[in-house]
Length: 169
Image (cartoon, rainbow, N blue to C red; front, side, top):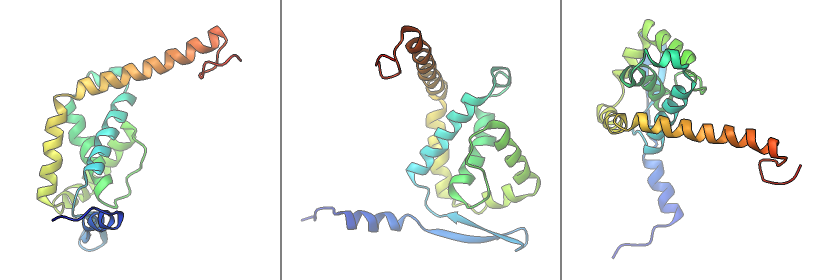
C-alpha cells in the first residue's frame, strides 16, 4: 500500500529535479551553470515572458514579426535566462532581449550554450512551443482585452466619483 505524501516527501522530490551542471565556455574563459531538468513552472515563465514581450511591441513592429521569429529569438533567450546563469535581464522588453540575443549570438555564447543544454529537455520546451503556437494569437488578444478592461475601469471610476474599489472619493 502506498503511503501518504508529506511535505518532506514533496521537498525531497523537488530537490531531485533541481540538478545543475557547470560547463566551460569560450575555451574555458568562462563557465555557465545549466539546469539538467527543465521544470514545467520555468517553461511557463518563458511563455509568460513572451506574452509580456509581445504586448510591449509597437503595432508597427508587430506587423513585420511572426510568432516563429519572436519565439526563435526571444523565446530562446528567455529559455537561456530560465535554465542557465547567463546574465540575461529579468525585464521582458523586446529591444533589450533582442540586444542580449544578438550579443550572445555574436560572441558565439548562444550556440555554445545551446549545444550544452540537455536534448531531451529542449524537446520538452519545443513540444510546448508547438502546442502554444497555435493558440498564441488568442492568448495575446485575451491579454490585450484584459488590459483594455483595466484601462477602461480606471477611466470610468474617477468620472463617476468612485475609486477602483467602488467607494466614494
